[in-house]
Length: 333
Length: 250
Ligand SMILES: Nc1ncnc2c1ncn2[C@@H]1O[C@H](COP(=O)(O)OP(=O)(O)O)[C@@H](O)[C@H]1O
Ligand SMILES: [Mg+2]
Image (cartoon, rainbow over all chains, first blue to last red):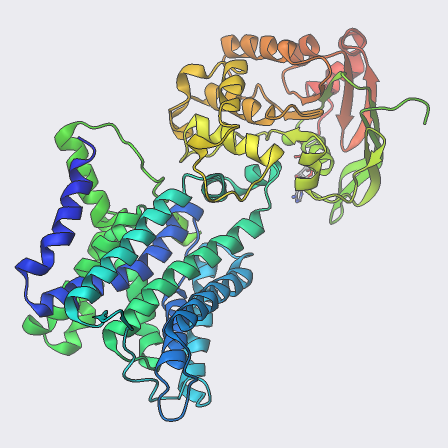
């Protein structure tokens, strides 16, 4: 029984390109996978280490900007490198950014972590806006395209979609793997009782910083997918709105389980694309805000929690693999 | 120093602002000894443990473990040296199973702690959790989430976690707090079953338990060491009885 849901998801992901048009393939499917991977980095932090962050889009932006800088110099800014080198550098820089943000945030909890990571995010936004030597200021970078490997253009719709599936699935399964290793168990110890974990011989601040580094790596993969999807990156990509979108999508999907990241990203992408059709643009943020509020009020563990509870009730399954959904009042701590 | 003591605490003091929570306490505990620290609420017992385990730096004084000065070591280093503790309030990892709780304890004591390639299930030291669960009577609860255990079982789990990779010095902070009479009895039995080479210091509120489980007793009052003696001497001392029952006020 337990393989039915994963199998259904795999089949759905594989046949999806053959039942939808190119808009749904790239703008909904591709975006859900890329953005969802950035959300996954937040869900990983929240669900397994009990830490919040508003800087995950910023870390993704670091990877996106690095990819652009090293593969698509614009207006004389940038340094063309072979794409494998560029991508390794982009991921290394994202991981480093994650580690540094972790160092800054490591002594804070709950709402204070949110505030300090938001401060980092806004500092980075203004840096990209005002710096022309590295970030090319307001303009940013254009024509950021995925590579062509052995004649296969990864920028074409179908290859891009499948590449996104493979990378997102690797990140998702990677998180599921890591949380079962001794390192991952220790992280859950940080989430549940940091004092106890220290008394058992673990270095709690180190674990917190490493978790931010790993989250940075994951966000970096999402950031690379994102910059390719948009074919461009500019300060708007790391501004307040996208930064908050990550948290919104995370809460929407449920910050207690990695699958919630993609559920949240999907719903968010749908609303983001279609709300404009039936609601005036200036009302859009109000709508998103209301949906957000409803989720927080009625299903603190997000849509995934809602589905899981319906599923559990329907099948009478025991609660297995809860991933230890954090209590919502952790957010206020 | 004549013979090597397991633990020597000398002139240990901890101030919180104007309050002297632990005031110039000197203790010597022999290897394999079972020692109880008694005292009314606020006497400074937990603060003493916090300093021995490294959770709080002392304001003055020194701590030696088997002759080695550990006063300046981090809590993690002290774990490696064989110091393990439990807390007054149950601190278990609620979102994890009993087995994972115990396994984290095993890894904390031995390392490597940051292993990321192999799942816990496939780690060579995974089976040590079975032994620990057996010792504290949780064998049939291994796959239960720690948050779903009864209070008594959580205390058993805490003890099991503290026993991972046998400690040299075990500090138990009110292990019987909140336990039923029956659970208390099985706790006393569990303590009696601990290997004799393990040095145990026990903070206990329940005089009966403490006196049943230990060889020697130190009584604290207002941060100071008030008296020391065998359980028989302590229970015969009316002054101590009065203080311990709180009749002299705090
Ligand atoms: N972190 C702390 N900050 C300030 N005061 C403290 C702290 N920890 C303990 N105290 C105070 O020190 C005294 C001794 O506390 P404690 O060691 O917990 O006593 P016991 O464990 O014997 O009940 C109490 O008056 C307590 O309020
Ligand atoms: Mg106490």
